[in-house]
Image (cartoon, rainbow, N blue to C red; front, top):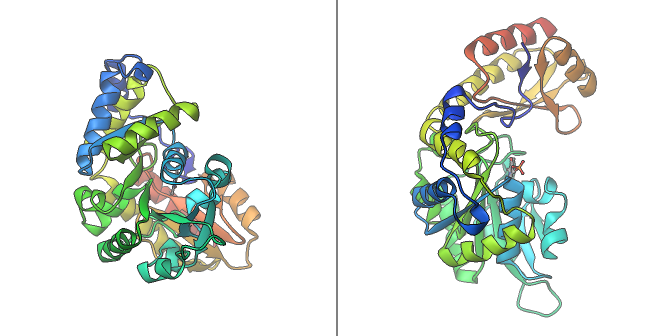
Length: 339
Ligand SMILES: *Cc1c(COP(=O)(O)O)cnc(C)c1O
């Protein structure tokens, strides 16, 4: 048994999810003929109180389509310096959209309205035109941290005042929703567009959904085709997404509980300098100099556990649908045996 905590993307479809996929009604979605893709798109839009949605192969694609639709070449995007759109999408903002990024610092991947305000460029030909703000909730590199609804509302208000578009990288928005107790409707009304991932904590094999107004999604559909993301009988994948939305949202609490327990276990180890407080399903900790990070990861792997290094002496573990209680107990034993 390998306990794979590298990411919540490592899950395999459950037998029930596979059944849902097997029985999906499909058609050619580039001709907009796939009823299951349409059903997923309608369901996702309704969940966030929006008009329309677009099923895409990945969260990188949904984010990059949003950047492309919301900006013109030469524009500037404001986001956190740790954000996925800047760090982990291969420079896509520049590559696809010709946009520059204004990177803001902030505790645990979060930024605030007053900070954004200070970084909006004046209307002057010397400066790139600030046109878009991107928020990540939960923040991946911030350690699965969540925004307070109040802070999001302030950012919405500011964007309205300054005529900026506001996009949510909500790869793990359901983790935040379950943890903070706000609703998807409350989140939806704050953003011009939202990207949600079905292939992270929700446990679907593939897929993300981009959500927004009818007009926004009409433009997004064109960009998706240009990016090579028009899929044919994608209903088999969409069926997994529908199943995930129906059955795998509430249970995210389980993942959060397991991450907290792992965090408490790590806290007690001699090889751990600091555990970043666990908010959802992502757990970051810093190693003391007892082990070098790469050696530590190899040692873990030799005992049947996988994690990833995401900085000097910084290790990440992510809990998920395929991380059982039995695996949790086994993990605790393994970690206790290393001190
Ligand atoms: C995983 C992730 C994405 C999208 O990643 P894909 O692997 O392209 O689906 C986007 N944003 C965040 C914060 C993520 O963690």
